[in-house]
Image (cartoon, rainbow, N blue to C red; front, side, top):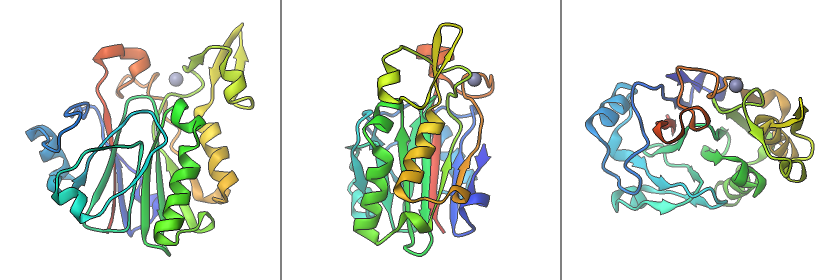
Length: 231
Ligand SMILES: [Zn+2]
């Protein structure tokens, strides 16, 4: 389990779970397994307050409130935002980049699932924009953290990616490798997030045997849960 709260600030709790519990399922239900629930309770998170989403590798940003959780809704989205400290934002990843966002002044948090497709579709800019619109957040006052995800050491892609992320595809020995974290950082900077307010935890899920990786484990790969809550 990785604790990212130290960087984002004492007013938030931010975690990236380890492989001791797999959060791949349930896919469209709010009912967690006993293992998953007790893991959350161990982190002092009430499993009943999780705002669940169904990730679809799109660019949808969902604003959640207490009613969303109380009604047990699971909407399609790849980013989720709130200003309600009673709610727990989560996304599930194996190799995609989890992007944690926090604006202290606005009292707002956001969590985005940035696979290459969503990143190319500007999910990061769209999440920041929605935080601005709904909660008066500003990128200049925001902190952002990029969690463990597949990095350019392992992320071999096809040449077509040169057209999608021209500055972030690295040629090596006749192959192409994508620096998705670099692309995410650029998207954050372009929105106005300050360099010193961006943390890249720098761990590659594919070459870390103690992390889930879709690239390395294929269908057997579990999912990590990224967790974000206001204190
Ligand atoms: Zn690697």
